[in-house]
Length: 263
Ligand code: KIV
Image 1 (cartoon, rainbow, N blue to C red):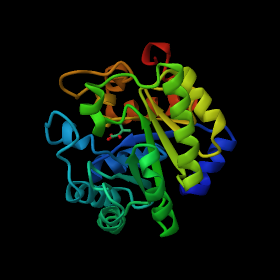
Image 2: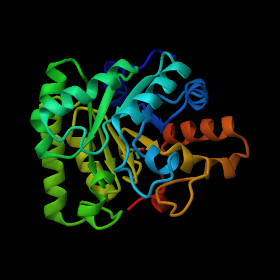
Image 3: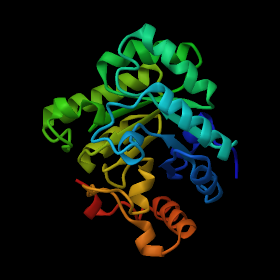
Image 4: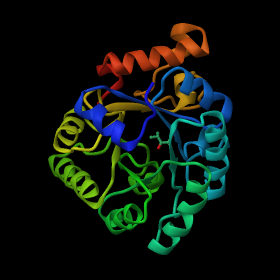
């Protein structure tokens, strides 16, 4: 399999070859995911919830993400790895430039930041300095207290138009990938069609250029609330390698997500 780069991801969009992404936090799972052909590994700040047992992602630190990025990189030396920038680690430009260093040193190929307009100078500064950026719009979990809970975003026409404008602005500022979380499928289609960069969805229907899931949801081991957009592939297959392979195959064939997983 060709080594994944930003250029390869771009080509996959052009060729309608769906991109598969999973969160990964350790070397063993990273190795398994890479072996099963998962295109992109994300060290998500979801680790605050699924590894640390916190109620949201806000307590996660740069050293947490750097630690897990090092582990993932050790398990999957050739994988395309995205490291999440945790809450407030990109609150100012100066802080952002300090925060990315341990993540890139740990082996990240790209960093992911949540938000729209306020991030545009940050995205520009990072890409100008050689740090590829993935944007994240929709239900951005670091803003859970602003949203008043984990709610579908972009439901009104005004909110949808604003999100589309933000997505275009992030691309223009230099973002090379975009995650859309928990938004109506119709809006995800508008954004995916309007952007030249690949768009990865989670709870955004099967119309995006690829999909991402939290690995604990795929394995059915997340505790508490199970989001509508997740799917327990271990229950379906009974074996970890087969569960990962089934996820890859269903994303590639666009049979996941179905309408039941979408808004
Ligand atoms: O933190 C994370 O795992 C994420 C994905 C859900 C996209 O941001």
